[in-house]
Image (cartoon, rainbow, N blue to C red; front, side, top):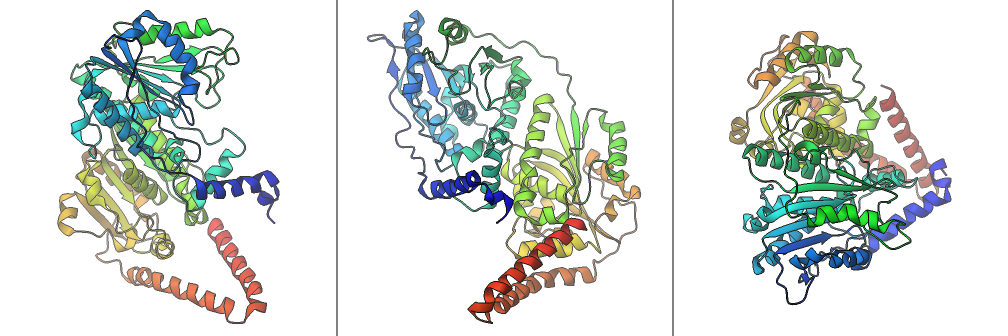
Length: 574
């Protein structure tokens, strides 16, 4: 037994995860919306206070907060709407649906009352749900009905209590990394809290959309809601610096709360705080101010255009081509406007193993959202090689708000069926160039083999080219450059780098610095044959393992596993 599974705690964790996956309930939206509670009998409130709680929290956890709230003279002006989302640690579903349902609920309540203002309160994951619901109502997502946008214009303040604005970090506890590995590796129904993980598509999509929506409000000189993030100085989940997207157009949003932990920030019982009056005084100011503080006029010093360079397998940010291209790009974009993120040395074996291959996608999405927050008015360009093309393509597919002007892909390792037409339709890319080679073995064989074995997001597009409706592709400004006479990295030759750079600047440069061949030649035949060879080998292996009867089958299974291990080691070395 491996060292990993000799740990009894680890075995128990995996058993528990499998058990919970089988028994976890899907969230029903039926009981999510309820009638708001009037704070004072006989008084018709003109303001609506919407509360979206943390994971597994109910009205009980908010009781001491509500008692304090009702004691304030101005509370009679408010109706109290508590959103009972019932999200637990093992709940199944997705947060987007819940945020939409909450947005519809708030719209329904507002449309049947005489509310002039709406205030949003969100605790922990409730903070991100509140932000998403607000953006949904404001019409920031194209898949959402604009019939539910009335209440967004009434929002005067958004008060966040330890909101997980950058997502839930992976390494909070000893078991968190193992759980994340399990969730990446084992097929399972989706847990809602996966949408709240660091760098998830939901978190990043919400953060980017937030910055762009507030930029639009600022540009149009429209009023914006007051935004505050209350953060306990004993919080082990949220970092006080995780608010870059909030502060892009709202200035400093952080209010520190002394001696408060993540879960008990909103509680006033003696076991949770020894200074309830001081804690309430902080909250009271933001809850009941007649006119929330208006935004100051910010002067933005961020970049107006940013280039991201992303290396591929068997490579690093310290490689010669990355350093040289970055130096050239700096002369055009500026010293602080070229990013070459480092995700460590990545072997072919790492790329072949799906959990390792997918591990860097959240990191890239998070980097992009942080760059948007730091440079809210910037436009983005991209140059990627090999695995860098895979990271970009999968990030674009799952994060609709991620946008680039011009994208240059060198030796793409993604499926030749990738839906670029939809990416262009959503306005995520303006122009795309991809450079391909005649002897690209990693693309032609490894990617073709992985695709044949079921990795649909990986493929030999660097050899077979991107397919799809030709009219759509023509309208999409996507063009192949090649065939370069050489291997996986030939298009990164020094003579071709200036052409890659000129393309991302202009979006209309498809020249090459090397002589090109008119056809790929025999590599296409090898690539097309690979999928059949892979399945022939799989079927042959299965026949060989079990044809000899039960007594020898186990031994042959062991030999096969050893052969797979050897293949993995070889891929890890080359």
